[in-house]
Amino acid sequence: MIARGVIALVAVAVFGAVRIPIEVSLDQAQRAAFLRQTALDLDLRERVGQMGFLAALSGFRSPLAAILWIEAHTAWERTEWGRMAALFDTVTSLQPRSLTYWDMASWHMAWNASVAAMNDTSVQSEALRQRNQRQYFQLGRDILERGLRNNPDSPFLHERMAVLLRDKFEDHCAAADAFQKAAELPGAAPYVARFAAYELAKCPGREREAYEALRKLYEAGDKQRMPTLLTTLRELEKKLEVPEAQRIDSRN
Picture (cartoon, rainbow, N blue to C red):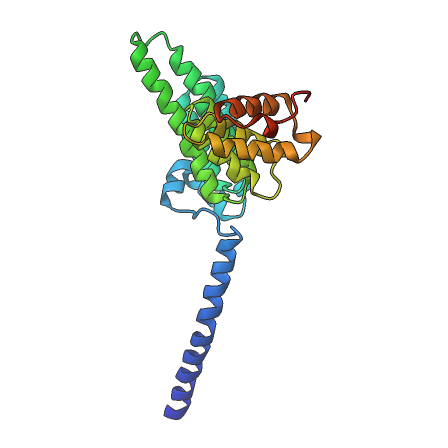
């Protein structure tokens, strides 16, 4: 009997030793493929309630997220910005790989809520309204940053971040880098590389880099030779004092 027990223990130990590296490898592969979604923890339970938490546990994440998204839209219509933000946070936690949820949540915060904050007549101080507006800009940025942590392979979210940095923060250097990240990923829109160069041209100290990027696009052919590209390229040629013989054809 003792011998059998020893054999059984040895067998369990060997099985465990073999299984552990396999499970570790599988876990790493799943994380690399973004198959491990946000954990269903107590924080999420508090936000969605017991019934919603049970629904998520039962595999109804997508329908639950859709229902909460409708509630968030209703909160937007009522200008209940705080409630809307909390609902968006829950929706994106339930469906972290849905690009639309991240994009729309950021847009509502950085565009809609920020405009409402700036036009809020109940706040007499313009400086305070501007501060509130900037806080909504930052909320929109925070949402996209979390979206990118869950979807680093998404050219779409990198592009949306670039637009936010350009239009709301007026940070042309950061916008250029974000557009460039999007352009380097599979599936990026063909105009994104041009937008990266346009923003780079507005970034002090990086004019030469912008010129080289625009010149490369120009040499790629007629499809890239948009009016803005040609105008920006000519401006950089003058600013950098590019020799006349090396400048683009003025007939373009």
